[in-house]
Image 1 (cartoon, rainbow, N blue to C red):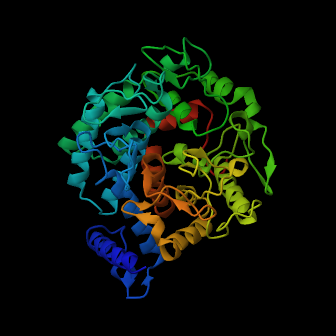
Image 2: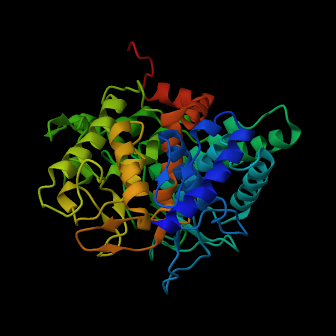
Image 3: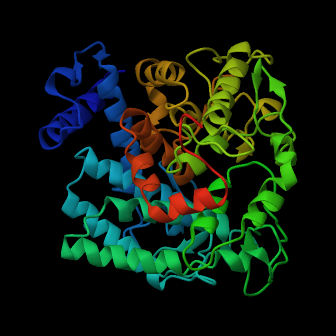
Length: 456
């Protein structure tokens, strides 16, 4: 524990310094205090701490040539991990995390703008296909690194995550500042060149996930039914240059209304049909995070769902399942919960109630703060007060299992990124407010029949 106390003291000093620069950071009276036996930290400071540490994955931990987020980072330097591989979707989350870092004073605005410029420069010259970026690249060269044999071209889902990050940055920039105005123009060019309509595969009423210059549409992955991909359809409708018709959303994503066939699980409605793309009443909890880092589910409704109810119920079902703990796994309970896709004893796995391996993934509970603040805070306090060996340089490690006495000191960009962003949305709504302020997004939502009026 003593090592962790020293670590808290160092980070505490950084947070106190940040508070002097930024009114949204913690005040001195809320700062970290420590002694030789234990650490005492307020809820507000603890939120600052985990945001600071997870933000650093995308700041200090970024691939240095491109500025992009590394796909993964292994503190144990396990053989086979290539630190040059960068990720599109994880970098989109990282762009939002960088905005949080600037706003909280973890870095200066000048530092943040410089990093945004580096990332945009990379995206302008890196491999892309009909304006759509691949899942992975080599950071130093910008050449595609195949995610699988045939997945060596455009990945529209991951590109949508990075587009959401770029639009968030654009809305954060000051168009009255010449340097930032130039960056706005460059982001607009990248955004407007994404050919969402190309991924209808010749005008079908559905979006396809992948296209390859070598294999064409061979992967044949039409994105239908509820999962993490809602943001792709929203942005496709929002595109000012390569938009889709509402029928693509209604017939493809919503399956002509079948998406509404929900079920009751742990006393709560699932609101949408998770079975369409999943063999469980609910999917991994990242479904409630990825699309909603920027897309604000508060009061968001369409003819298929109330999206706040959808996501809050998903998080609460996950929580109730872990408290119930039907497999009697060691450690599960009110302060230790959260199932989502992550590392596991058996490699990468999509943890959920019917695929429960006894593995807890910290991003699940921590990225659910807007939906389950009390339950998420209990988990956060447990991690930092009682399980500090599960925390490293960039915050909580990706996954752990008390049942199997297992954890690895490793991180994944797609798991670290939602943590600082969703915690900020819980605290101030910053990223939600920025992304939702984009006029194209509002037009796209309206086009698809969404409303955001609480009286609707």
